[in-house]
Image (cartoon, rainbow, N blue to C red; front, top):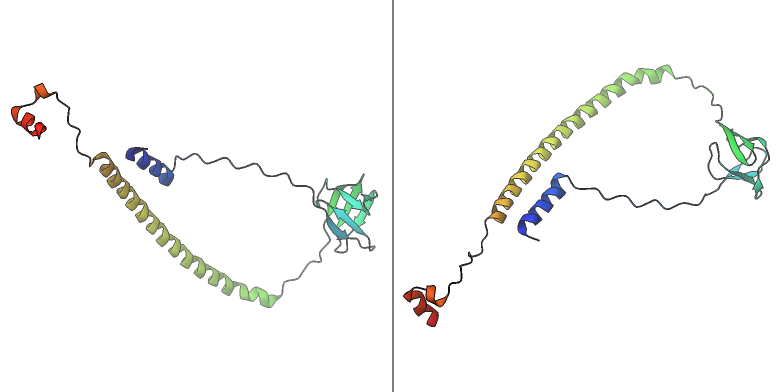
Length: 173
């Protein structure tokens, strides 16, 4: 690889235009069953808790109908597959007045923190921009060095008859 090609390759790696490698195909995972305890004390195994998930009870497909977990979640099962998932009902929580009074102070603290982070981000952007300019200048210098060869120029080989008398004398030594 010539120096010019090496410089071009480094430029491509640093400044883009590089083709990203294709990701390796994800390995196929076998279904992993998780145990869920029912409200009536039984345990069902489910591969995924969503519509289409497989449900087994004692190694057999779960019976059709509604099954309720201890946490209140309900699933509808047909032919051993989940057809519906109902989240447990949660009671509404009333917000205390005292907690509401604290919110303006919390918001001002968040705004102050956000302003500090925004200033830090701006400073980092400036630093990155300076480094980018320095890298570009460095590579322009590297290109100049690569284009200016430090090897001696190759002289044309002349026959003995084409040489001057001085060159003939030096060649005989």
